[in-house]
Length: 117
Image (cartoon, rainbow, N blue to C red; front, top):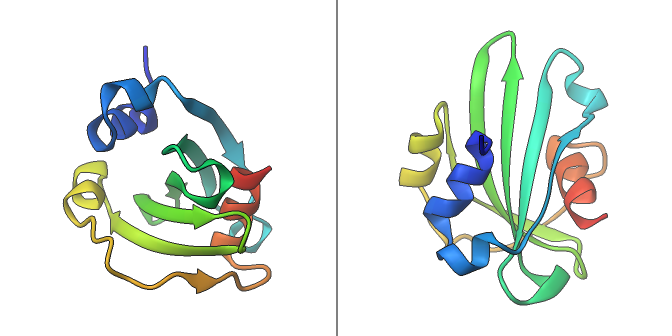
């Protein structure tokens, strides 16, 4: 059975690209110790300069999803979509935001480092 995050990638990416999934893994985030995080990383054909990362957070307040574009080489990222459900995150995808630098110790910092490793 495919994970919900891989299913999300299938909806975001062409079928051929889904075969290029790099990894699906748990990510420790010490700054949010009451929650657990999982990510799926998708190489969209530009190597580490353009990855799509879908993260799932499960914590005391419930479940949420975030979709980020990541440039490992420049240590930058941008949120492309967020929501309490995977559908909400996917329906809110917007690729017009500017890329931002990582803030050391932020949730995105841990997510991006895991995606780029």
